[in-house]
Amino acid sequence: MRPAPTALCLRLSLALALSLGFVRPLAVAWATAPAPIYVGSWAVRVTQGYQEVERLARKFGFVNLGQIFPDGQYFHLRHRGVAQQSLTPHWGHRLRLKKDPKVQWFEQQTLRRRFKRSFAEPSDPWFSKQWYMNTQVQPDLNILQVWSQGLTGQGVVVSILDDGIEKDHPDLWANYDPLASYDFNDYDADPQPRYTPSDENRHGTRCAGEVAAIANNHFCGAGVAFNARIGGVRMLDGTITDVVEAQSLSLQPQHIHIYSASWGPEDDGRTVDGPGILTREAFRLGVTKGRGGLGTLFVWASGNGGLHYDNCNCDGYTNSIHTLSVGSTTKQGRVPWYSEACASTLTTTYSSGVVTDPQIVTTDLHHQCTDKHTGTSASAPLAAGMIALALEANPFLSWRDMQHLVVRASRPAQLQAEDWRVNGVGRRVSHHYGYGLLDAGLLVDMARTWLPTQPQKKCAILVVHVPTPILPRMHVKKEVSACAGRHNYIRSLEHVQVQLSLSYSRRGDLEISLTSPMGTRSTLVAIRPLDVSGQGYNNWIFMSTHFWDEDPQGLWILGLENKGYYFNTGTSAAPSRQ
Picture 1: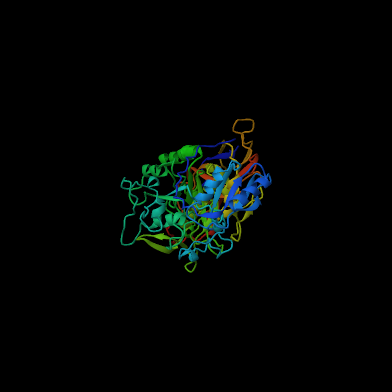
Picture 2 (picture 1 turned 90 degrees about the vertical axis):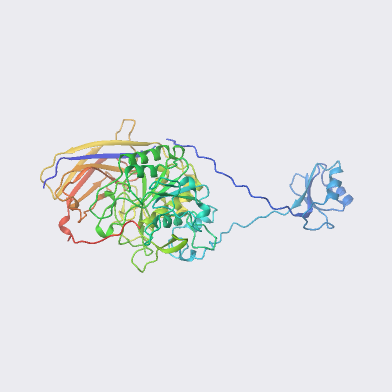
C-alpha cells in the first residue's frame, strides 16, 4: 500500500546563555564535639622577640622550641613538668602567662583528631557481590573513585516512582524521606507496598536499594549514593491514569532532585504509546520550574522488549527529550536478550544477561536482600545514583547540563555491538548503548567544573511530502538552515525530533532513519515483526540523541524502507520491566 502524505517536522534543540536557579540550603546536623585533651605545650605571642621569650621560658620553667612563623612573634613552648595528656588545662601556667605584660596571647595546645582520607570499601556482607562497582569487572561503574572523594549523595533527594517502597527496611529506613513519598493508588502519605503471596510489589523497594541502601551497617550491600535521601511513590499498584502519572511526576518538585522510573507501555513489540496531556505537562513543568528552575531530572529505563524486537522509540517516555533514558549491558559487555535498541537511549549501566550471569544486589521485601534484580529496571536506578553523586559535587547543574555531562561521561569501553558508529563530532554511539557505559568518576570530575548551558532553542521545519510509488524504499530530503538569522538560530544540536504522520498497511515492516548533514545515520525505528498495525504513525514523535553537538545546517535525509520480508514473524514472550 502506498503511504499517505508524509509530514516531517525536525525540532532541533541547542544549548546557548546562563541559566542558573536557586538551590535550597542543605540542613546541617551538628554533632557534639568530644572533650578536649590538653598537652604539655603552649603557643605564645611575644612581640619583643627571641630574647624576651627566652626570659619568659627560664622564668616559668618552659623549654623554648622556637618560632612558629618566620615573623618572630609566635613561639612554641613546652613544659616537661606537665602531663602530656590531660582533660583539664594547667591553671597555674595559664595564670602566670596571663599576668605577664609581655605576653600578648597564649593557648595551651589540645589534641586534634585528624584522619587520612584513604577510603575503605563498605563493610556490608554483600558488597563483595556488587561486581559492577567493586572492581570485579573492568571497567566497572567507577563508583569507588567517587566515594574516595567523600561524595556519597549527601543532600540529594531521589524518589522511586513504582509500586511502593518498604520504608522500614533495615537498609533503607535511615535514608527514607517522607517528603519524597506518597501513595497515589490509595491517596495517602504511606508508600508501603501491598504484600501478596507472590511478592509482585517488590519492584520499587529493589530499585530504591540500588540508589540509597545504607552502607557499613553490616547488612546487605551498599547503594550507589548511600547517603542520599530516598523516597517512594506508589502509583503502579492500582488504576493508572494520566492524572496518577502526572501527579507522581510532579510530587514535591522543589524538594526532589531526581525521579527514577522503570516502567512504561507494554514491551510487546506492537504498542506505540506514551504520556498523556497531563503527564507531558508534568514533564514540561518539571524541567522548567523544578529545583528552583534548574529542572527536575527524570531517569528512565529504556525497556525490556528485546525478545519481541521492540523499539524504545515507540515508548513516549524514554523517547522524550525530558527523560534521561538508560539501557543495559551484561558483565561481559554484551547486549542482553531483553534490551531494546533505539536512538533515544543516552547511556548504559550494568544488569544481567543469560541465567548464569550475575545480577544486581539490592534490598527486597520483608526486610530481605536479593542478588536477583535484573532488566533495564536495574540499570536506571544505578544511573540515578551516579547522577546523585554528580549533583552533590555540583548542585547547580540543570537538567540539560546533566544530559551533556552524561553524553561526555559515557564510554564505549568493552561494550560489544555491530552498530557502533562515529558521529559528526567524533563520538562513538550505538542504538543499543547510547554513548556507552556511564563512568561515575568521569561524570563527577566534569560536573565540578561544568559551565551552565545557555537557554534551549528550538527550530521546527515542516516538510510535507506527497509520495510517489517508490516503496519499499523512499527518501525525503530537505535543506535546513536551522533558523539562521532568527532568534532561535541553532548552531549545535542536542535532541533531534521527527514528528511523523503516515499510513501503511503493516507498520512494523518499516525501518525509518534520519541522516544529518554531517553524515550521521540514526535509525528512528527498526522493524518490529509483531507490529501488524495498519494505522501507521499519527503525529508520532521519534527522537534521536546521536547528533549531539553536530552542526544542523545542510541536507537532512529521512529514509523509509520496507524490511519486513527479512523476518519470520513467529511468536515469543518478553518480560515486563522487572
